[in-house]
Image 1 (cartoon, helix red, strand yellow):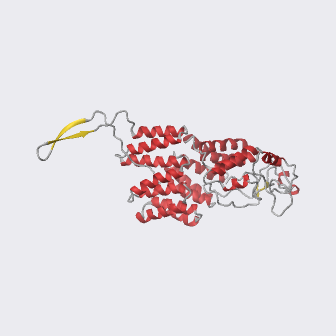
Image 2: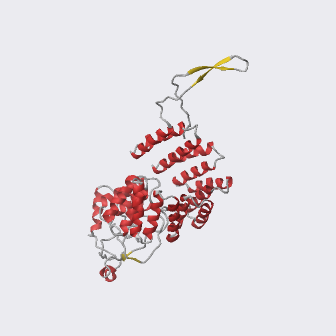
Image 3: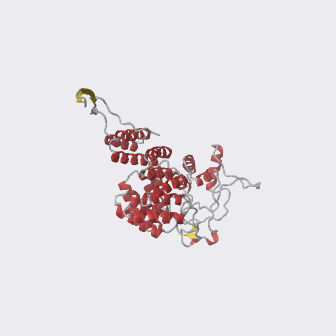
Length: 428
């Protein structure tokens, strides 16, 4: 909650005689701004510098002061408010973002943009049901406002009402086909449903309308990667990083690309940058843990999984990894060309972390219920050595398929395929 205050500094107040209707005079005081007081634009610049330096509390205060000082200029105040809420969301302070947006929404019940801002903050805070309610209010208030359909469609997608959500997002695009944001939202929903080709078309439309938007480059790079257009994908992801060197999502998608190309060292570096610039994304920390795990760096993997669980919302699969409850059909990526039977002896090198975990008091793999056998670390389900394609093809392993297309929804189950020629980690 915040209070809008317009601060005026008194510097050399002037006494002026003003005529009254009765012919007399009255004394009034006029006030001029202190030249040393920072303007709203100066405070915004200061807030950006503080945010880039990781001084989040100071940046939050500077944005608040800038918004207060811009009270006499509604257009400037609105631009500052939007940037303020966006900063809070990307800083992982979604609760604060909701409070700031809610204040404006409550103070301006007739303005549709307040509904949209509030709904955006609720979606970022993982409250799609509440966001859906605000979006419906906006649609009723202004049936021709595409912002209402955009927020409603994204909320429906988060609630896994995919077909309905896509139709509503199409309505937003129809109402404003020049808005890159609406194309990106529709493309992300299509990508999540597995329709990568149509998603790529929407991302290209977004890029056409916003050629310097780093997010549009990230999303198109993601779609091209899932179309196996690796070189073109990297071009767009590199461009996104050039436009926004602190874009954690760009580094994350680049890490996934490197993993698909079996460039694990490069993937590890990319995921490292992802968590550096987006430290509040639990999915990024999970991917960071996975890339450590497949390289047998168990202590680092555990630290990354633990961080993924500590964040809000926690990434569900990280909890299983910390508890030793790895899904039986997940792939533990072997090195290229290496075959492993379905059952491996207890001396397997992947079990070396178990005694270390026991000694350090970390969670250990659990024994199967009703079994008197000692707990063992889970083993990857790969093809038996007798029919392992790696004997002939060199790289193929049994795999349960790539994660479902669409990296925004972390909880969508993966589509399964029997074989793949590129072993990869499960990061969604």
